[in-house]
Length: 84
Image (cartoon, rainbow, N blue to C red; front, side, top):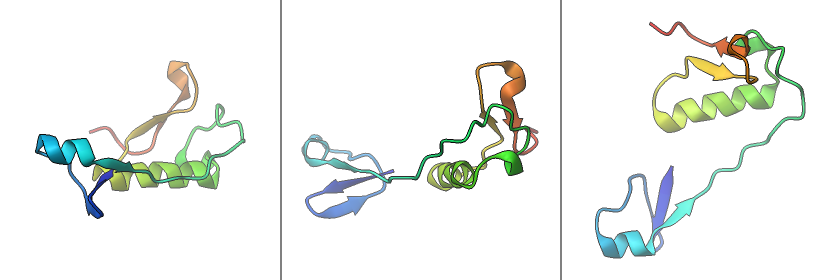
């Protein structure tokens, strides 16, 4: 996540009202996937673009992703890493 303010990129939300008013979000585009992931039961079962998406989220938040939903049911939650 980043913002562009008067031609410079900032990694944190602007602190002043003036900077906030001039801030524009910097978007990162990731390729999607068409494959049905509802039957995935491990990280390796996900299509490559879904795996890249999870890795990009980890990089953006600075922390590991432990679980990801692949459908609406409870049994459609992948445990990518141990929660504890």
